[in-house]
Length: 118
Image 1 (cartoon, helix red, strand yellow):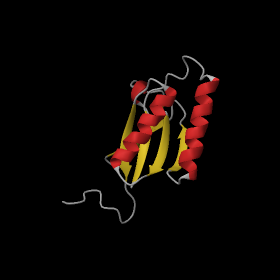
Image 2 (cartoon, rainbow, N blue to C red):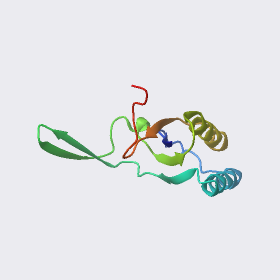
Image 3 (tube, rainbow, N blue to C red):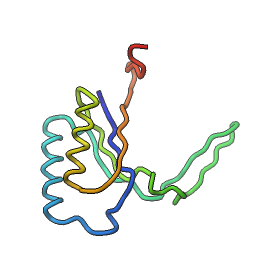
């Protein structure tokens, strides 16, 4: 099962990360990468572009957007056996970085059943 772990608020501009946190995060990333759990990770630009399609018309709007605190600022794509494992990885992440907020969503690909058991 693949999950996208998204950080949705960004307090990183408030204070720079300390050396101990960077070391712990490096260990966490190395461990999960070697285990084949962490498939990709990264930060996202703060403003972005919004694309809207309505009635055949495509509209492009440059950011920033009003609800910036809810926008995704970072992500990790992980492959685990269960949703609980994805939640535990997110818990470990927040124990390293401290306060924050995020969202976890399962990722479906070709051949995956997004509604198993229905």
